[in-house]
Image (cartoon, rainbow, N blue to C red; front, side, top):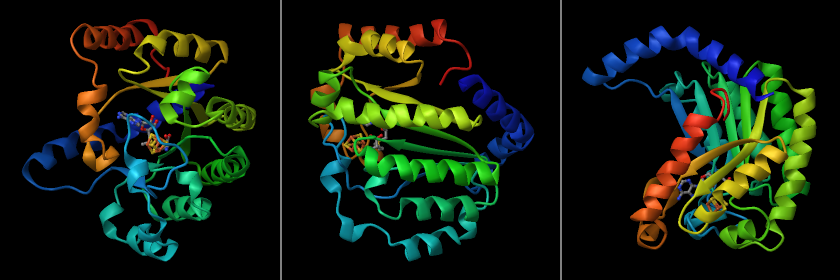
Length: 264
Ligand SMILES: C[S@@+](CC[C@H](N)C(=O)[O-])C[C@H]1O[C@@H](n2cnc3c(N)ncnc32)[C@H](O)[C@@H]1O
Ligand code: SF4
C-alpha cells in the first residue's frame, strides 16, 4: 500500500522536477511563491506531550475563524503550493476541520499532496472527520497521507503524551484508518514517532511493533523550534547528548540503510 502511494508521489514529483530545479535557482536571486505549506489550524490540543509545547499556547479564541481561513486562502500568495499539511495543536479538536480541509483542497490550484498529523486520541471525533477528508482528497485526485503520532508502545506512549489510555485510544483510530486504506489505494496511512531522550530506549520496540501491525512508520528526530513547536526551552531537558546522541544518530542511519526505499 505504501508502495502504491510512493510511486504515485514520485510520478507526480517527477513531472514538476524541472520546474523545481529552475525555481531553486530563481529563489537565490528573488523571492518566489512558496510551494510547501504547514498550516497549524489550532494550538488547542488533547495531549500534553513532553517534547512539544504547542499545547501550552492553545486558545480557541485566537484560532482563525472559518471565514478568516477562507479569506486567507484566497490570497495569490498560495498559488504555487503543491504540498500542504494540516497540523497543530490537534486538528481534530476543531469542529470545522472538514470545512478547513475542503477550503484548502479547493483553493490551492497546484495542490498535489495533502497531509494531516493527529493524536488519534478521540476516535469518535477523528474517525468520521478523517474518513470525510480522505473522500474529498480522492474526489479531487490529490494524493493524501495521514499519520497518527505514536511515541512508545503502551505505557511509554501514555507517559510521553501524558494521556491515560492514550495508546489504546490512538490504536482505535489506527485500526479504523487501516480499514479505510483498503478502500482507497492512494491513501498513505501510517504512524509518526518523535525520538528524544525519554523514548530513545523504546525506539527499536516501536519499530518492531509497527512492523508487526503492518504500519508504515516515520521517525522524527527531536527538534527545538519556537515557531513550530514553542519548545526551545525544552532543549536542555530532552536533547540526547554525547553517547546518547550517537545512539540516536545510529538508529536513524540504520533506518536509511535497512528500510525499503519507498517506506515512509
Ligand atoms: C506538533 S504535532 C501536531 C499534530 C498532532 N497534535 C500530533 O501530535 O500528531 C505534529 C508532529 O510533530 C511531532 N513532534 C512533536 N514534538 C516534536 C519535536 N520536539 N521534534 C520533532 N517532532 C515533534 C509530533 O510527534 C507529531 O507527529
Ligand atoms: S505533539 Fe501534537 S499532541 Fe503533542 S502537544 Fe504537540 S501538538 Fe499536542
